Length: 270
Image (cartoon, rainbow, N blue to C red):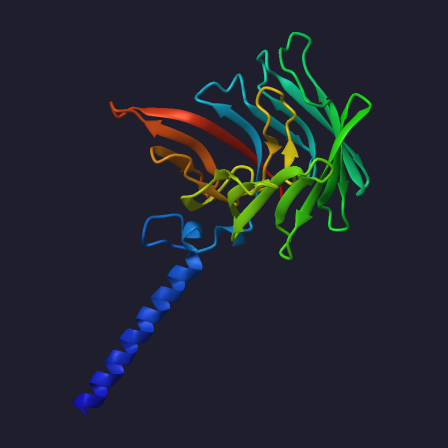
């Protein structure tokens, strides 16, 4: 009889423990005092989507390096300003032609010192809404074209100027580019490592686009990483409750925090 009662008590304790675990899981409580979303193993299954609207160096929010204006439902970028309120400001207007193509038009303030490699370009879309090619112009004069190539998973694997046999290849590991190589030499141009489980600010931007700045030619938008990567061994970062990186910073030898870049986001209204 005592043995039977012991078994019944043991089963009751097990049932109570299981019930508590189930209640904890349903309530979203995190016993590790960390954001439960970030412990899911794949932050990109999260329903939350935020869109980058402002980026600035240090604490100088009056001279943002990039300001992005979206349409109401964040399906299209309407305007981007870089180096706002400085002598290096460039503005980019986006014109859409149904689902077929998009034109990006450059402009700058009268007193700006910026020089551009081209003044506008036209992006042609494929049936899946991805860029298939871009034609670059200086005023109305054609300059060159770039072809965008994708793998079976839909990841961008190269952007190539076939006429001049130049371009870049993008080497992926999961959702992130970890190497960028030259076409046709295959020489390594850039490498990225130390990926974290948090969102990179450009991850919800729709296209890889050139900025055309002759002084600092790189990209206007570059959704090449879903995860934030460590830019340098001494670089630290902060993120919000949804896992989006909001600031990168360094710690000085004196132990002081020095902000490098701040990121601000907007979110769709329900």
